[in-house]
Image (cartoon, rainbow, N blue to C red; front, side):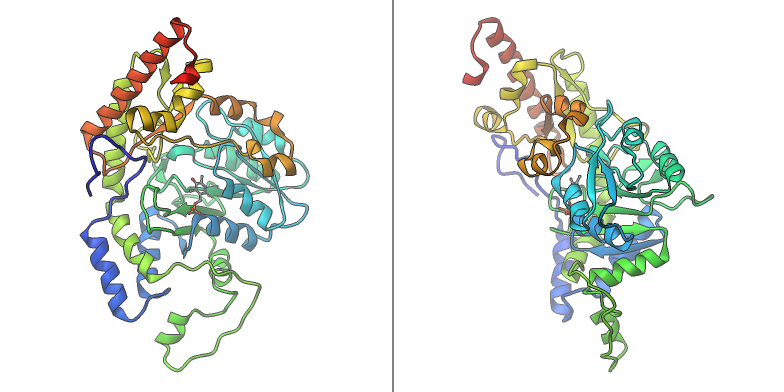
Length: 406
Ligand SMILES: *Cc1c(COP(=O)(O)O)cnc(C)c1O
């Protein structure tokens, strides 16, 4: 994969190799395009990779979260606690089942703070929905303990966390000892910019066989049997619709990509980790920035490299990606605009005060390009640009020039 030229470094470029291309071509020529043998293979290989007991391939992480919430029976008058520092769909899925999203503020590391979760629990709370922000695992021990104490479900949004590890175990894995330290469902994303991709796609894993079959049934119109299943039992055209289902299945064309992305995931993360290390080194000693929370050992999947700026009022113009693009040709981004700042969420639940830390952090964060298709020289170039802009800003500030003019 090549990046057009050194003068523009996009925020993301996917790493798609010949293996993926050949597998998609084989799928196209096989005569079976939708959910079939390649999806089954991808599910099985992903299940084995994370060490889960059940895996259901779906069309997105959003679909995975919605299915999990629906299959667990969440609905009206139920409250689900989640983080303000996430993508909107985490919260949408709670609304889709008719439940009420309740935001609990983040801690120092950007992940939902278990102390804030405890504070947000009411008699109506039914579930906790943590997000492993940037690929850094949440404090799951504390979250599982709260869930046990209050009889709550735990559904993890692991959109950033394919390949992340918590206490040595992959996110989504079943414990080999007792079954206590485990979530009800864990949802992964294979969106184009994520650590591994199928273009669009997702996977939901669970330790509960009954929940897996219910999610599988709901993912395809609530039907008792999918088309591949009927095809392989020649002549068996019969199926029954058992519930109000969705159209959330993954296709074999997408699974064809996923099979090979999964095989490369560890290597991808290795490169991400190395590049994050280079950024950390480059920014060490630069007073105006703070490097992201590192995670321990090999726990972090480094989906995002989120730099924190210490420039107060200058931070906002600096991180405006348009100015970065114009002045230096770097596709930087911001993850995320906190949930309460979006007009829709502000209207449905004016709970801004509970999210102070997320709102303050938002003023300072800037996601830098970080992906395996980058060359090391490009990582260093991005770091040099950021350092230049920071230095220029400090100079401007001392000369009293308005930052908004940059
Ligand atoms: C990308 C993302 C999602 C949604 O994933 P899709 O596969 O696009 O549905 C959900 N949550 C977070 C935190 C994400 O970054």
